[in-house]
Length: 218
Length: 215
Image: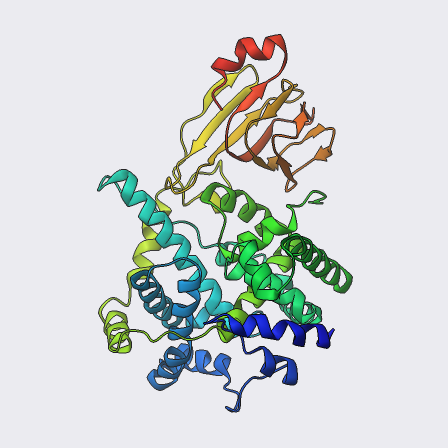
């Protein structure tokens, strides 16, 4: 399988701006790049407990440009992506005490914050188009927070982490391209160098596999 | 609560990625909040979202972005608390917690044994959302959909060719589904529904009352 993915490497890298450091991920499988691994969860903890500005600056410098990058891929304008990046970091500061490293990784948690802000932004944009200044509707519920039958979530977190790791690289890649980066199937096909028809079945397979692994570990 | 009918995986993944339109986000979200199994699936996709965030090519933010953010944090530290108080006004015991942030219309009778309350959305999507209440034992007319319909049972139950659907169960209908649900006898059935397109009643009676059933 590694060989197959190596073969995919060429068309992927040929596309300008393709973001993933596939070689690094394949070779190490875990932490990427030469930098020492920063414990983002610890920095969030310091923001929560003492309002540590320096810890927050490091979080900001790492995550704000990445949030902006991801939002640009998800169809936001540059201004919108900037706005979401800034608002997400404000939310990181304000909600730092709600972050539980036992249930979510720092990046996944920040991803959900940015995701929710994007949902809000798209809705308020539609609202503004439609209502033009009439009464403001309440904010949409926060999907990340509403799912809080949290008791079992700590055991769940370990299970979920290992489930995600058990997906093959090509499976997690196709899920990320399709759902997180929202790339249309023809684009995924050309990025991965596979026929269009294979994209759909590979997504399907990855979804089923993830469900199976999760059920198995439950 | 034993949940036996779940949303399809791609719908859950779209939910986790924040890609669903509002009405669908709402229905799937209420299911996920009450279903540990789907909750885990959503969290797994969120993990992948976190990995994507780590791997994406960073795009520089405005040069003064950090200062702007710090001054906004400094200027309005209590903003969140105010917002929560604001939302508390719309509380209504009749509706599940996830819907309490929404404005919900008055109950409107649409057919014998059938009433609905529409849920006010932002208008960013095509689907409508409403609460549908049917009396025990109601036989829904045979109908097909012109669009898609996501249904989540909140109370009571109904059954059709696809099985029995009780609290927490999720049902997906599209224009290929042709069903005739029967509401369980144990009590009224309350469902949260997201619907695009229209219901199309089959049969003569359906065609007669169809124009009046504005779901």
